[in-house]
Length: 202
Image (tube, rainbow, N blue to C red; front, side, top):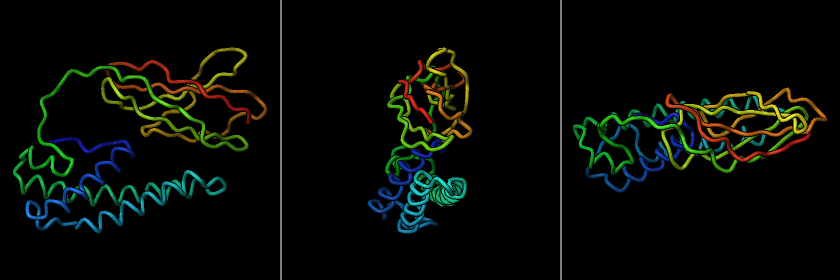
């Protein structure tokens, strides 16, 4: 069957499609184990926890843990309804697509990911930066992202972090140095062209 998404943004999108599909097609899916309103509550709790994790600085670790816990709960609820839908439709791809889901897909050769889009430095503080970007709009699926940094004066890029979602908080960044950051998408077939560059002096 279709693969459950790994990236948080894709999970949230699928949750919205699943809620809308279950609501609009109640005759097709009359008895989901998790009703749409409960999914909506879980999605709202995750969204709130995510915003808290992004905004929080002094309690960033606590906020991220709460966000991850809310995401895990949302994923568990979604998977219960998707298993129900697969059983109810007997894997009918057309009916599953009513929920933003899909049936079996033929395997295809993987291509390297396209370029990461719109890298931004959203927040920064003493010794840390929060980077956010948009996933590639083309190319093969992304397995992970590699974050690189360099001092602007010497031009040597080095790896400073990896992420599976389209965001990362980098800590223990040296103060008083002008750094440049960029992000590269990765999968088994290779890596993307580097993203745009953002600068920070912490």
